Image 1 (spheres, rainbow, N blue to C red):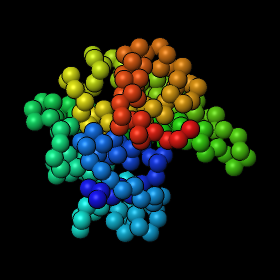
Image 2: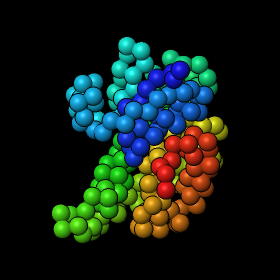
Image 3: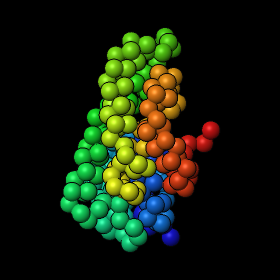
Image 4: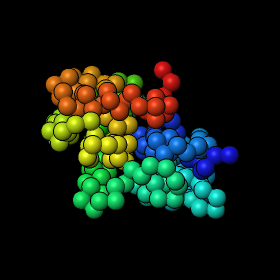
Amino acid sequence: MADFTILSVPQSNFGRSVAMLALEKGLSFDFKLEPPHSDAVKEVNPFGKVPIIKHGDISIYETSAIARYVDAAFSGPKFFPSDPVATAAVEQWVSLHNMFDQTMIRQYALAYVFPHEDENINREKIANALEPLEKQLTMIDDALDGDFLVGDSLTYADMAIYPTLHYMTQFPESSAMLEKLPNLSKYITGIAARDSSIKTALAK
């Protein structure tokens, strides 16, 4: 029997972070395919966003709240450190990721995925994203001093950011930027090799 149910779509970077957390904790989950703004999603989240988790009679939305709940409510390794300084660092990265997502996914990646009505890629939108995109990727590269964002072991900060960074390996401008950022490239490769990443990757 699954420990809980995730309502999301496989393409969601936020949904993937929750699935990775569950797998790293050794939990099982049912994945229920529910696109944003479906009736089942809006029944829980008035803004229609995924992911959502259902655990018994409890339904939770907003990814950070979900992650906090899963980490605290279930046994297994903890990915929000008990040390207050380390916890603040994790929360800081999770908060920063909301900004990264706006640039990297909403402005940049989706300009490739959802082109103009004439089916041409939105080059203007991509061009406008490149300066902040490079600044954000460089900031992460500069902050890395090892295999993980916080301390010397995996935390939820890594699981929050990695799915978005994975998408940056898929597009020409961002992948070219990553080639010039050795710390970040090594980091992405390391997280990509984890079972939780492999098991939650989109099928090719």
